[in-house]
Length: 422
Image 1 (cartoon, rainbow, N blue to C red):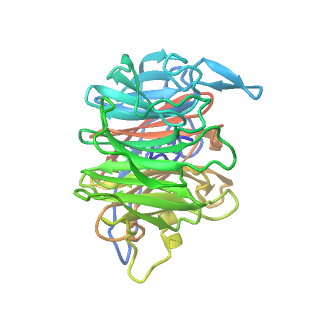
Image 2: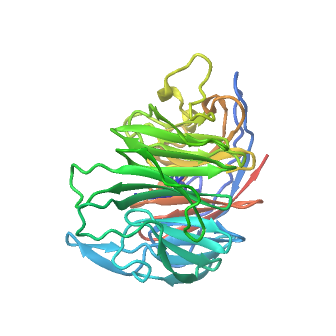
Image 3: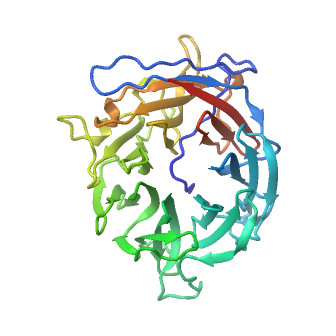
């Protein structure tokens, strides 16, 4: 599980197979309804970021970037190496490597799961995301500060009566951060049921709200928060469920939504608490589907076009000209709109063979349904029409005047500088 909310695969590179990049001068087409974004994209040549490999997450911290990637430390599981994801590297705001520290298993003995990375007043924090709730503090230069604490009590592996923490999803909002945590009795079996609790903590790990039980059968929690509003999502009984906690409300409103069985990814659409949810419509290289999404109202109800009730029609990738076959989604509120990064499989231009194509799509945020917006879209192919590498991970690092696109796989990490003009 990759935790962070909000991560569609993206890498930007040369259009035409050469070593240089070309800018995507894409302007949205006309639309008979909804709003229209109009953005021109310009992309630099890629730069290799040191010898970093297997990036798992990244975060903008002040005027630089912190990347979390594979450590050299591993344990053997089922005859295969399982690595800690605890190398923390600092990049400048253009994506150039400044420093790197491999923490190995010193942060959590034997732990090879994922971590949440969340901004804090003094730098950032990391919270275990795959098992446990260990909280760690780092300064702005990715140096460990102080000792670890646990958001919830640690349960002994031999216990059969206490609920142990499993998966976590989280997001920062104001004076702390929200965490949605699944718990189960031990030992875990194929019949284990996970309850889900939502709680807000301050940056020292103190509870600011009681833990609210929001599900008795949940998997894969995700959280988005901003402006005093929090939206949690998870899978329950093979379907998607949302918990919307509006600002000033006494408790969250819970409802199921029809994503066709796809994992929902909540996203803050602006800094005023407007929320949405995205999902991938299970497209593959050979079958159609798409990146889909809706804004939600204060009760968590989807905002749909007039007369429409079927969420499986809320496709956002119609103008991307290909099948989005990757399942993760990277999306951020940015400059008054929503920026989505993704990849599709299709033809870059008429007569070309099918290949992986990378996509940037910017959407305006208004009162209309997201699917009614006409996005600005920029499409790119990898150098030499290369396919996406093994276990690719892509992150948009957004600054006020530009973005850095990080493209990583098992072997290397590339950085692209992207500017937008409207």
